[in-house]
Image (cartoon, rainbow, N blue to C red; front, side, top):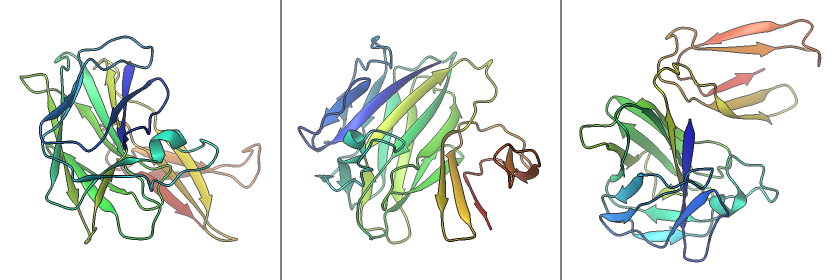
Length: 239
């Protein structure tokens, strides 16, 4: 497997390697090509903003110690738009491989900032409001005849803007049928409940028990309660 990381945002808001920095407001049919993977090797991958994005934002929600899904340098800034749905095209892909596309948006304010990310029959939703740890994931994708995948980003729930800080392209062999989830995050909601979230990286898990979450009242997990969750689940609240 290999991954390519693309950082979007305002001019000067660079992120360190392995991030490919694509900064400034994006025009229609703007392209970044010759992207490098996490090892610094050149790839054939390119990303195109099919539609223009109207602005950038420097109000991403940072953690202060780089413990989010991506570094604070990525969370801090992104591109933004308040118009119609936007399309992102990823090209230069290998038809014999499978791909996951990961998107992150972040905005440090209380306004609704939800969007749907869609390709084919798959849709993943993301709320960019105060976001440091959640992503939208489109999984197990096969490139079309041109070696491309097209994703559409649509504002939902009356959101004023769509925000996009990062895109990650994950390539793997189709012999790998299941990829383990990532970005596990646990947050206390109050004295008696917690919320557990993670990124789903597979699109072919069992429909009724795609995930098993284990809960215990001891640190050694000497006594375990197993909780089966449907396919594509990305959160669970325990009370």
